Image 1 (spheres, helix red, strand yellow):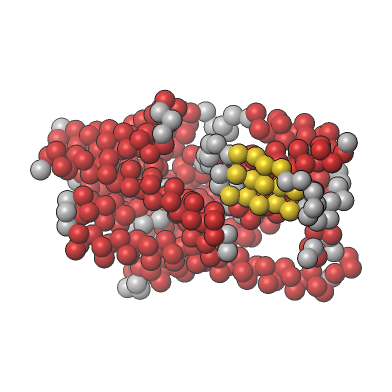
Image 2 (cartoon, chains in turn orange, brown; image 1 turned 180 degrees about the vertical axis):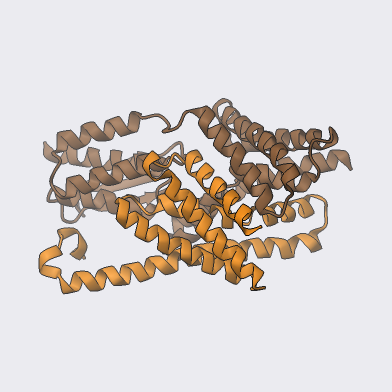
Length: 157
Length: 247
């Protein structure tokens, strides 16, 4: 069952990479990032961990893997990030919320909508977390090797 | 005069990146870096989703570019990024950089439209399974998702008002899904619709918006958030119309 989930999440993430015009040479890596994120998410869900926490952790994993791949292929991180988080986006919940709204079931719609907001917040938070860690590592490195690697751009202001 | 040319490259680079859906901070950073490669130490850049402002010095006149269309084209983002890397390490002259940027600007999509359609179709099928759907609904979701995404692309090129194009495309998507289920080709209309609507959902935009807000780019965060909300609303309303009619 988990194998088929991995397969479809790979297809979905790589499909989105194509829709977003990701460069050809990193296409399957985009799929793998999405698959990893979804793998972490489903695993945590199987361990009966709350969806928001699971999404947060999965987003952090996606972001870390994306950072590494972005360094490796010297591309902007957004290429891997975006395709990676696609499986985590709470599209189904958003749809349910919208449908309840349209059918005038406001009392059922609002908890769903709040959950959608929490989940997208968790995704963004996960992405930012790893970015902050990465920045801290980078700055520490640059301070140490300031003379060799200092570029004018880094010390403006 | 060198200054004018450098400002031109910076603005062109920024414009391509913003139109291709790059993060706001990356756009500003790229422009400032290019400027600094040509000895403009105090270059100032400010980007929002609808406009870029740039000045090569604090007291210098400010230049301005309006951004009309926004799409997601990660290949262009990565190309501009690598051009700016080459410029900052002085491997590219102004003329070369200008030429390459113009080429990137003229470029069309990396993948032909039919490949993108197929990708959207299969991604839809995948989402149906991921949202606990059954494999029986895979093929219907592929078909409905492909039609929905194709409709969206077509209507975007015909109708200038984004909101309305998305609304119409979602109505058609809902009708197709309903038809497929009525004919007995699909089992659960909810799962089919959720899967096939995903290529239209502004997931990237929502996340980018929250990200921009958290990073302190308040103006772009709110603008992107508004755009994402409008799109989500258009899709939700469009798809749900079918339930109004059926009920």
